[in-house]
Length: 117
Image (cartoon, rainbow, N blue to C red):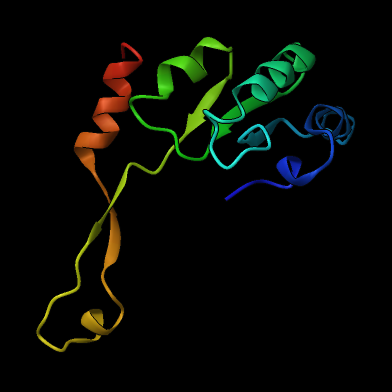
């Protein structure tokens, strides 16, 4: 899901408005469907922020994309590290819902490892 910053015509200019409003952090994919796809805009946002506001990259962040995103200087990464658990076939309520998402511990630790943490 993209943030309100991401759906504006100019996320970098909108970042300035967020600073003027006194916000401390923005979550952004750089205006793209994934943070990796918006990496150039995220880099521009980090440069424009100049430490006045934190830029957190989010959307599709995983172990493969995390190092490149961190390299542009974002202050934080937001990721779900989720996987879907299939619904049981026993006719329970959970089965009618088609399953559910859970945090995948291995995926979360893979992001940490990719970042050298």
